[in-house]
Image (cartoon, rainbow, N blue to C red; front, side, top):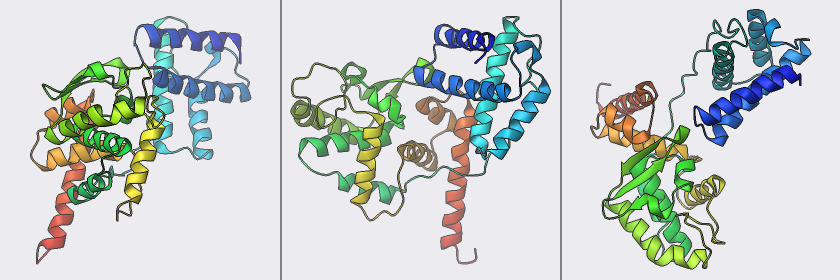
Length: 299
């Protein structure tokens, strides 16, 4: 990779770390997108920032289409590169942003999948048990459903982040933004049981403060949570495959279905923009439409 392009990328990474305070995972996504564009520029014989033009941006979009990237992936790459060149323009390393006039592809009209309340009951029954792993699994499931937190936020919970007396959780979200989220009695009871009878058996005197641990007593990973949830689904009569974000979708959808206002759900989810939360209003409308068509005699 050309030294000038590498230096520009490293300068941008430093900005993301110090000024934006982004997580290492978010930064790695930016770096991946920028390096993919740089590889395209190399094939096009472009080696200097000053020679990157709007034409290259349009040709890059054609390349992404030919390589069959999804609309979501293309949109993310556009956002990453637009931010990158906007930063370079601010720092006067380039005179114009070559991604300024590139349009995001229309989003695919897929609604987020969620569990119905009856399906959630099946999942809770699947993790009933008094052994340490069952207690842990139930605490994880109850907490994910009760708070709508992301799996990355769940696995980063430390003991000091929990306040069982107030039934609240300090969540460290995207961009290292923190928020307090309440949880209900079912989650409270499950966590208390896990802390009393499950975690001490699993941790085996290993000195760390992570709330959730694996069978060896080490901090649980996001991959571990996915495996736990998939195992729970296999124990039920559910045919749907599960991904951890489905519980986040379920949390938001059930709140809105039961009358919660959109701003409250936005705050609980930790969404920076209301438009991200508004997606769930389409889910609830679809749910209402299906219910109407199923039960109204003249639907």
